[in-house]
Image 1 (cartoon, rainbow, N blue to C red):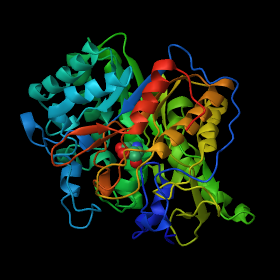
Image 2 (image 1 turned 135 degrees about the vertical axis):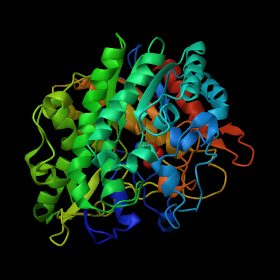
Image 3 (image 1 turned 180 degrees about the vertical axis):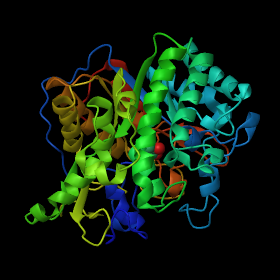
Image 4 (image 1 turned 30 degrees about the vertical axis):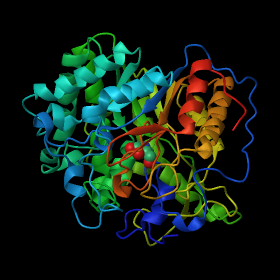
Length: 491
Ligand code: IFM
């Protein structure tokens, strides 16, 4: 594994995968197919029947699917810039076409409805609504999302819109991006513009998607846009994203009554590597937990930052900020893929270095540890330590083995992965967690950030030359679950 820490330049992509839900590591050499592994993780559940009103859905993001980067006045984003820098994207691709969903949205909605799913989580591209991130609203951009929302409603699919899924308008980045305090207010203004126009029919909002990934991978490790490697940016970026979220929640509520508003966090149990010497690595695990999980949950749900964030945040938190951030939410969105393993690295500014899962762990095609108990663990933490808020699982899924060929259509490994994680969800519900829904990642194989088109998380494969979509076996399996509300014992 890589041997450099968070906050030190040059960390390898392979090492980072275990550090972040949004990161993925190349595992071509592992000889593993998809997400299938050698065994089961025993999760005892009393019943396999989910409540009738449980929300079954699928999640996507604008930059990974829409394409059409200049259509109808869209402004450039940080990912348009980053993907063109040499060597940044594994297969040298861009998302200029992606799944062409800006044009094919109706087909996508048909696929969602055809799978018996009642909810679609997509993201709105900030730079379609405000091409330079602030200032005058681009009506044509909002027209597109109105058409998408109407298409969902016409098919009985409830739209859930994420307002920020990493595609910051480039013009805002040019003024400092999220490390600049003004971006927080611009985000709130953008949220208000969306709700004022669409709030009569778009009722469900998610403010931020996985801000930990954006802050760490984009500003400290340089693996994601905006490609910065400066640990001094961590504190201001974290705080201004939290502040922007608080201001945006207030702005949404001021713009329209009756909205349902949440946030989506990439929660990971942070585990010290190398048992039985794990005690030595425990401070690194505690440190990552503070930075990755608690720096977002604590200010929102408890009104404070973890003490371990003090040095990073010094000088950035003003009087009144914590009250602004602590807004009531209607649900907490939890994205879960794998636990993180870390070790103490005294040479790294953060003292945290990524590490491998324990020997013999079951790994997916990314080298991620397949461990549904990690999902149970984060859900229990949310229940016990954060006042048991209503939760939606807003992402969970796995990739086909790496490659540029067509998607794997007989993807039993995916159904198996989903089934095992849904068992963890059901177990958490039986233990008292207030989980109201589950969105799998994702609908159609799309553009996976720095991995380009080499990883495929979809229930549906796509021929990149023609855009033709072909449902995989997991599409039919998930449809059965959504339509019956019953979790089968197979595959
Ligand atoms: O594709 C990403 C998504 O954008 C954020 N969560 C993790 C997914 C899979 O890596």
